[in-house]
Length: 397
Image (tube, rainbow, N blue to C red; front, side):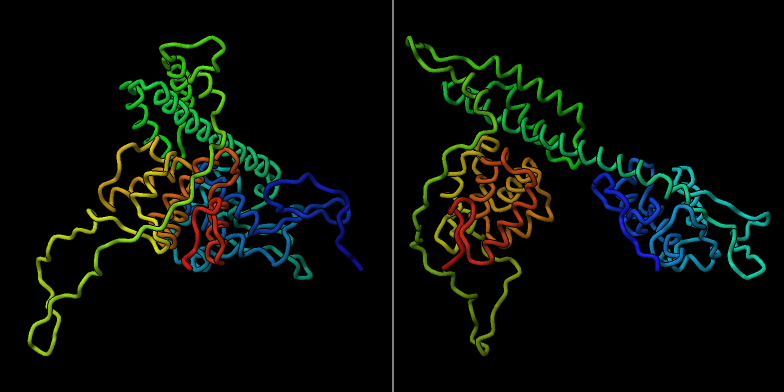
């Protein structure tokens, strides 16, 4: 009886797409292979439609792990396989096959008249076929895995560089504030440029390095104190450089704030059976001008006044809910958080608690390896009734 057992421990990679069988033969899981190609599609010059074409051909191959030494040819006719590609147009499907071949993932092996069919021996077994040969993909698995690991390493290096730039810029603004010097116009211009660069999904590494060099040159221009007594400690410039990326002291506890305003009254009613009148032009709303409170009594103004890290990037206090939401989304981008993670967090916590949470993340971002995963973990703890962000954000009693 043939039993599959690993003959040797293969090198560990990000995606475990292969298994080692008896005799040292590798076999591959087709859907993990598809995931690997999907991760590398931009680097391979492919688009989402090409991935759908590859998926359709992989679904045609016999069930079970794929053996590179076997016959891995998809010979289903195009008219039949289109249903496995979500009804894609035939011309687009064929163009996708051509791009897959140009990327070195498949080889088109067509008959003289372009038909696709298998060839059988006298016993009816398939020994060859005309169609789309996927052997090139199976032969490049280890190369593709190395490319995937290289891509992950590049993303991590870029994220670390982005965190370092954010921390150094924050330390630079603190250094100017510590000596009472006004911020140069060059720093204000860099603030806007830094915001635009870090909000991009894939910032240009060259532009990031240029920003880093500019920040380093501005660090040398931080003015020292007017008088330095003998034996004094390091200057604000050196202190800012030494403390880049380190955690600051935690925020104090916030007292409960109660509002003296009465609850909002319902719409005016008429004498016609108490029906509600909804005016086409409503009266001006004043909710943006009066203090707002979360369920724990923390006002947005109070939370903002204590968000020292956020205010280093956005010194002006938001004067509307829309502007506050824009600030929270921009600052979240600096931390490497995507909208699909931040928006549900704002809906769950509310704006005041979200200010405290993002300020906490900004203070400790240098110690957080995966910001989005860390934020999701905090939100799960919050939903279980636990205090998060160092005890600053607590569920409603």
